[in-house]
Length: 342
Image (cartoon, rainbow, N blue to C red; front, side):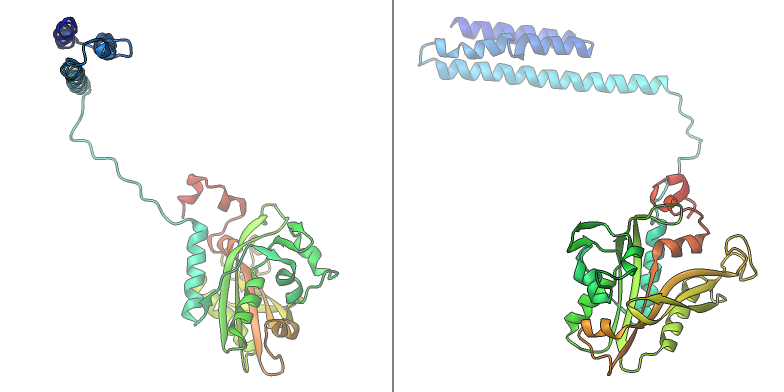
């Protein structure tokens, strides 16, 4: 019965030590002394195997009960000391309950996301639907199917990130248009937008190696350049202001013929001429044109029966024009001081 007596003595000593403890350090000392790895009760538990087999259940239960009681006493004491510490801290801290509360600062959409959502809303309102595709693209869909063969000089303009001769990061979202046309198996009409991130080896205050592009495609019987101009004008007026004007300038893109750059009247000076538009009164916003017959054929359509238009813009650039930004890198810097302005 010596082990039972020892356990009763340890339990009584633990009760007294925990009750008299006034600091966290004293409570921890009591824990180590009695229920720590080499504590008295822990050691007694390991000695249960030394008693006669008939007494082991009783002695084992007594040892476990002692350990559980001590741990409960320690937890209770820690709770008491924590409350006392909190009360002492509140007593030392002088709180002026008449002061106004601290306002909660709400988050908001990123400036790029806001313009992206607005562009998508405008085109969905004109009857377009969203199409998506992979960002790691085959050379065929990214270039060849868009009338840009391997030796075409237009490839130099793209500054592509290649994985190998046949795979690259897409340089535009036009491959999505080819994939979407093929998936329709010649069905009409085709009205889709293909937004997403694209990648080019270009980086300065007006270019980013990764940027968000937004393209639109319409294919049907009788689609004309007038339809293209009307679509661009509707987009510009809704994105910027109803008073904004547009103009089309002849240009060259291998996947459209004829091709045109679209400008909007300067959103800063209203077309009068300023530093932002370099005195011209116009700001370039997107590239566009009538879909090249070769691209229509590669998409599964007969260019003798249908026509189409396509346009593409960098949402980053539209964002810069809409908010008067002078450095595209601010959009991606995640500087909260900059983003809170919008």
